[in-house]
Length: 103
Ligand code: HEC
Image (cartoon, rainbow, N blue to C red; front, top):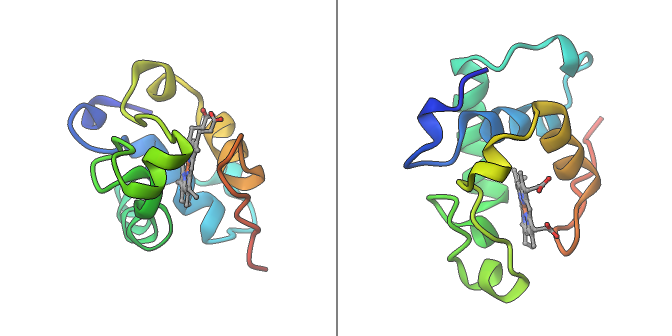
């Protein structure tokens, strides 16, 4: 998994993790974070995440600032493993709401 694309934009890992979580794939661990997953994640990100994390992942959306969503482009976040990110997105973290899987 490369995070090279994540320098100026939301990282592919985050988009792919969102795709894994939100598309409720039967075996997410077996799904590779490829371009298709990133594209699916981008669409879902616009729908579900942009209100807090902003289009660029900076967290500068009104709700994101209020809840201190932070910057998803930070090295600490980009360095996290897909499974950790998926867990945060699936279970919620801090003030980030949980996103239950749609079966
Ligand atoms: C209601 C506002 C809100 C929405 C909507 C939201 N988030 Fe968050 N998100 C947060 C906040 C606040 C944090 C910081 C949580 C903390 O570290 O305490 C966060 C943290 C994160 C992190 C870092 C997790 C970690 O392990 O440090 C990721 C990745 C993330 N969000 C992805 C997403 C994705 C993908 C979506 C859409 C499916 C989403 N968020 C929707 C508020 C939100």
